[in-house]
Image 1 (cartoon, rainbow, N blue to C red):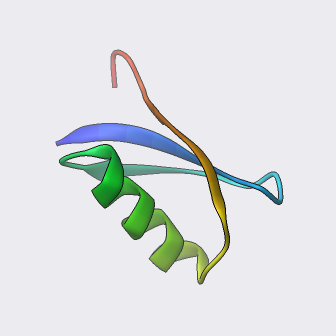
Image 2 (cartoon, rainbow, N blue to C red; image 1 turned 180 degrees about the vertical axis):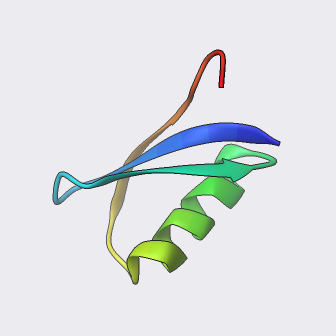
Length: 46
């Protein structure tokens, strides 16, 4: 698993472990309870 930081348009960001960026986007959206994802970045060294 890789750690991704998912950024939302409202300024929130969540770190999630997922297999790929699309899965990370879905996991973060579920954890936050909705919202619009603006960016997904893979965290290096994590």
